[in-house]
Every structure is written in structure tokens, then in C-alpha cells.
Length: 136
Image 1 (spheres, rainbow, N blue to C red):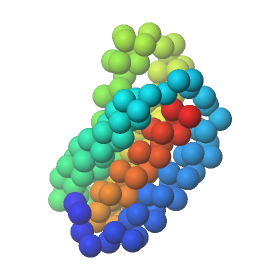
Image 2: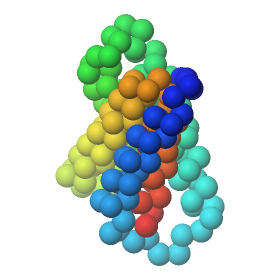
Image 3: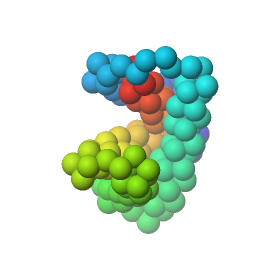
Image 4: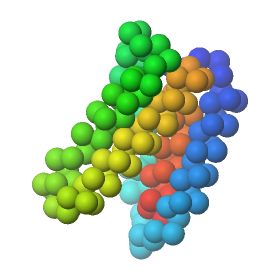
């Protein structure tokens, strides 16, 4: 999960984080506190350890280098968000689909980085960049 590929995985993570920043930096959330930033960073670390690290790493035992691994991991991350989007935030079906697709696609990308480099840190960096870019 944390192999000796720090330069490669960090480069991928920073590159993907920059893309996220360019896409999502147009959104502005006023009055962001350090606590909210801390939650965004901590959430990114836990999500990447769980999905890209543990789940994708476990599935690699059975489907090493397979796209099915990435699709299944991304689907799990997307499905996990559906009850929150639907029942807590009461999002419309289209917005809920958007939440699913964002979680699905970004988790696939971050799991691919882990698959390519053998290190989950690149996905963590990218997810932190995504969360901070969405916050503005």
C-alpha cells in the first residue's frame, strides 16, 4: 500500500489535484474555517485508505491490473454516498446521479494511481486536492 514509489505517486496525485482545482475552483463556499479544511483533509485520507488502499488492494489479489477492480471500487464509493445525498441533503435524482458519478469516477482514478504505483499516497493527494477545490 505504501511502496517505494513516492516521487511517481506524488506526481500523479499532484497532477490530478491540479486538474480538480482547475475544474472545481469556480465554486465558492464563503467563510471556510480551519475545522472544515481539517475535515476535508481527514476525510480524504480515510476514504483513500479504505477504497484505494484496502478494498482495491484486496480485489487486486483476484483481478490484478483489471478494470473490474476499478469499476467495483468506484461503484462502492458511489453507492456509499447515495443515502446521504438522497435522505440527508434531499438532492434531486439528477443531482444524486451527479454525486454518484463524481465519487465513482474519482475513486476509479485514485485506485488506478494506486494500481499503477503501488502507493496510496497519490490518491490521497488527489482526493485532498478535490475536496479543497470543491470548498473553494
